[in-house]
Length: 132
Image 1: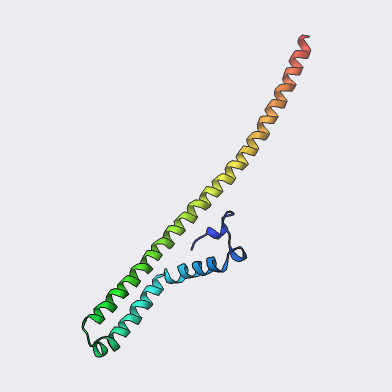
Image 2 (image 1 turned 45 degrees about the horizontal axis):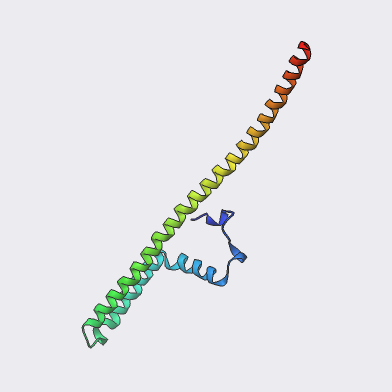
């Protein structure tokens, strides 16, 4: 499961165009092992029922098998891209969390620095007031 939708820089939902939503749906569905298994099943049924009986020329079935292989390769590449997207989203969220923590630490550090400055000013006024 990817978490890219939680990143503040990524548009989601109604912010996306119809084409972007369609691309996300295509990537999500065609780039899955479920689709690969379904494609293999459908092609095996197609080859078993129509491949040997209806093909007059013997290379038509080979063409069908190679086309199936190309379809599988595209789906498996999309599966790999989905995994890469998942890793990228996890890294982006980790970076966002670290940035948020650093901003909080910087705010705390700035407040502490201001307190040190105020205390130093008070000490200086006390020391300078006694010696004058």
